[in-house]
Amino acid sequence: MTARSGRRPGGPLAGLLAALVLASGCVVGGVNEGAPQQPLPRSTRQPSSPQGEQTRADGTTSVAEFQEDMAVAVDKAEIYWTAQFRASGRRFQPVRRVVPYQREGEVSCAGQALPRNNAVYCSAGDFIAYDVRWSVAAFRQVGDAFLYYLLGHEYAHGIQVRLGIRAQFTIQQELQADCMAGAYIGGSIEAGQLRLEDGDLDEFREGLLAVGDDPDQPWFAEGAHGTAEQRTDHFFRGYEQGLAACNLG
Image (cartoon, rainbow, N blue to C red; front, side, top):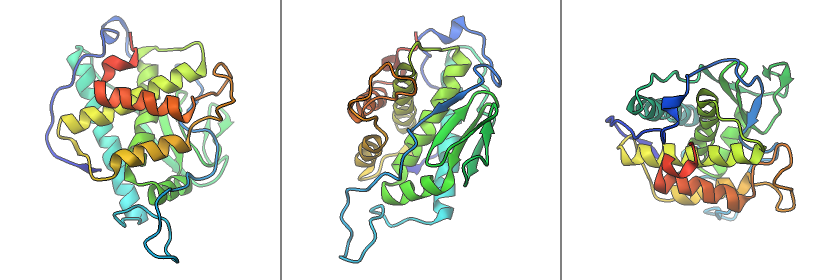
């Protein structure tokens, strides 16, 4: 996935935005996790040689390239959501910070230490934090498209806070964030902000398969995010249909 120049106003936030006062910072005061704490997603690609490491197909695996893609993902998310809010007559306040960390407990949210192998949105401080080692490894094994999904999902939690959306069950909040992440990526491609490359759709599916809940986990369980099938379905609803598919109001 690559960035392209050009800006285009987005569509309305399904009427919900006009009825709400925007807020940022300490609203919910907790953590929204984008993926259950788990090991690195395993790639299904075959290495180019028997001794080759399983890495993304285009061979770009450096930390510098990861940092560049992360910066682009944040920038395009801000452009996308600014356009959506503006189209509804409101001013958008971007998420304050995106923070990498390397060790469990290095970053905390409202006194709660953030775990390894994860990415989270902290509403208490209005920031996104991610385990940089896990994220770089996923970038190498799954691909850059997974990184855009990961950032898009966490950014969606920030949008939910700004819109005052509080679901009864965790899984409702998480699947909606998957849908919103898909809308951000699909809308950015449609607007010419991002360009889909060969293999990107497979990378989205592969990443979503890696972060799905165990099929036996009850949907009403605290912390449930949805099975791989549910997460994939909601992401591609947003990707193909936009925010109208995300039940924002």
